[in-house]
Amino acid sequence: MAFGFGHIGRMLTVALAGLALVGGVLANPAHADWKREWPELTFAVVPAENADGVVARYEPMLAYMSKALGVAVKLRVANDYAAVIEGLNGGQVHFAHLGPAAYARANVVTGGKVEPLVSLVDATDTIGYFSVMYVRADDPAKSLQDLKGRPVCLVDPNSASGNNVPRFAMSKMGIDPDRDFSKVVYAGSHENAVLALQQKTCDGAFNWWNSAEASNLLRMAKKAMVKAEDFRIVFKSDLIPGSPISILDSRPPEMKAAIRKAFLDVHAADKAAFDRITDGKYKRYGEVNREMYGVVIDLIKFVDSLRKSK
Image (cartoon, rainbow, N blue to C red):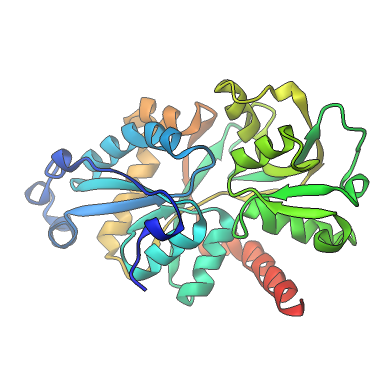
């Protein structure tokens, strides 16, 4: 099937073709071959916020990446991870920001042919984040068990913090979400899950959380979409490996090295672009490898086994 983000929702493309020749082919002969073959690269992301917000957030980063790589870099924003994985596998997406569960899924789809390059490093020098469940502040629930018989919101079937990690954790607690909750709703995005909780579509919503200073909820509060004090956490997972910038193994080594270096350098080379992406809550990007995601691949196998058993 031909790849196109249109079949799953809105696609937005931001292109910076005018920067395609900055630091171009002749300036770096070692990279000349891949730049001639790929004068434009597509970077794909799945939004945790509305698509317009993602485009605005990434514009400075795209300008930086175009300058650092010496080719035009454009952004594609999809509604779900499945479209990004399809794009990587089909060659229409050259590198992508994947959640850890989506990275593991991409490895299943491609037969292990996707390589993680970098992930964000937080203020404590940790590469990773957590899944949490929020309830409304006035809800008497103290734990996941207290929500049995009530509706809950997940995010996306391929989201680590929004689906796979919660299901894995609940299985260890003896909770079957499809049996024990009155309704399970896939909200589609982390923002939508919180909004559904606010609107009482569900009584609990899973989300990503890095620290008391960095979370999707705080990002939404900063945009005046919600008030953070209207929600509280009743569940927090173990540490999840960070969301990796990923690329197909088959891409030229020089291309992979250049993309990795651009991300590793951005916090110093263009701090404004880096802070726009991260809300100023992270220190830098750090290198990651396949071994770090073994636990997530095991988690994906667990989720697949649950699906097959139904």
